[in-house]
Each structure stands twice: as structure tokens, then as C-alpha cells.
Length: 349
Image (tube, rainbow, N blue to C red):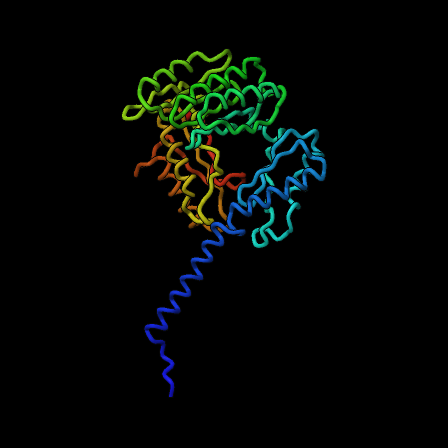
């Protein structure tokens, strides 16, 4: 009779073959046509082509996984609704399994105005500045793009939506440039300008630059003002966060541009989200004593244990201590677009 028992040599060969199959799968889904980047690029291209075919040249779209984010100044509500439907059906149906667009997030002008007129800039690791949000007019948008390209060593990537009348002040462009000019002096950082409140957070190469940046931003064009949290290498941060509105602005700047998410629908925040949560916690520590931070976590579907684990993970990252910070509240919410969101209020409110 033949001995069908697997010899060590055969077992080794089988294991090596299995390992090669797993490695091929990892490469395929990390770098091949089924990688996140490839899927996003394909879906974005399809959505843009579909928008163009419907005459929606006012609209722009970018992808966050299989979620499409629609931006632009829609001429009316009917055009906006049609653009949303166009993007949603721009790839074959089937959702996550088939690889189509699963959802369209509306960030067109009407939706954005509800959240307020916001301009932000973030310095990438290569020294390039990413500018996103709103601009008052084409002249201001183009002037800001030229200014940023000239002042940042890595150049500028500018994508601003025109919101006529979004800022009532004629000095909005000057306020945006003032913040950008000081951001260019930092090793890394971010800024926001929401309404009349600006904020700059980041790291400076030495205490002299940190102090200089903070002092210059004390003199913003009227009626604008700027909060600052600038940390020099090897020294305490230069902090100027005078009230709850300023605290809210530095928290918004600290969040970064990545959509907050949990890993594979689990309890662990993604690496980018974890960094953002720690950064938010550090910025909130610089806020006035009467400020309160509420972190809202989107409730999962019928999984109380997962919700509890997410609350614990987020709380640990934001507070970065074992004991709870009495000014930080991490709560579950049933309806919100982002997996995690932040709000600042007074302790009394």
C-alpha cells in the first residue's frame, strides 16, 4: 500500500505555495487594480466623465474609498440633486462588492454655507501646502494660489470653491495671506479661517520663530483675529487661545484633512485618525478652563460591545491619560456623516 502521509518535503512545498498565493493577494489588493488607490482613481474618473456629460461643469468630485465627495457652486437645487444622482450612478451598481460608488457626500455650496465659510491650509511632509475650502471671488482665489506657490518650498495645491458674499469683509484675502505667510515659516502645521476667527497650529524650528509668528498674528486685519498654538523644538508651546471661539478654531485646524474612520469597521481608529485625535487632545489642553470638548462617535448597527470599545479607544487617545478629563465628553450619536466629529462649547452650555 502507498503511504499517503505528507512527507516533510511535500509539506514544506505546500506551505511555500500557500505563502506565495497570500503574497500575490496582498500585492494585488495593495498595488494592483483592486487597491484602494486604483479603485478611487477609477471611480473619480468615471464620476467626472458622467458629470461632464450632464453639463455639470460647476461640480468637482473626489473619492474617499468608495464614497464620493461632491463640491462646487450649484446654480440651483435641481442641478445639485441631479449631480448627486449622476455621481451615484456613474459606476455599475453593486456597492462594496462590485466596487461602485456607495454614497455621495454633498459638500456643494449650499451645504457648505450651513457649516460656515471656511478656508484651510495644511503643510504636507514634502513642504507642499494643500489649500481647501472657500474663497470670496476668483480674484482672491487666484491671488492666494500665487502667494502660496511663491512662499512654500514645495509649491501649492489649491482647490477653493467660490462663495460670493461668503465673507462680508473686503480684507478677507489679506487675512488669509497673513495666516499663510506665517504658516510658511513653520516646519509643519495647519491653519483655518472660519468667519472672522482664524487659527494657526504647528511646529517651529526654534522659540524665536514661534514667538514671532504668535506676535505677528496678534495684528490681523479688522475684524479678523487669530488663535495660535505653535510649539518650538525643545521648548514649551507659544499659546494664544483666548476664548471658546478661538478654541473651536484650533481644534478644527488640528483635525487635519483625512476623514476620521475606524479600521475595518472595528474599534481601533485608523492611523491617521489616531494621530488627529492625539493632536486634538493636545490643542484642547491649550484652551480656556471654561471650554468643553464633545467628541461624537457614530453609533454602529446593533453592536453595543463595539460601541463601548470605540468610546474607550477614542477617549484614551483624546485625553492621553488614564483618568478622564472632566472637560472632555465622548458620546454616541445616531446620525452624522463622519465616524467621529468634534464640538466646542462652554462648560455651562
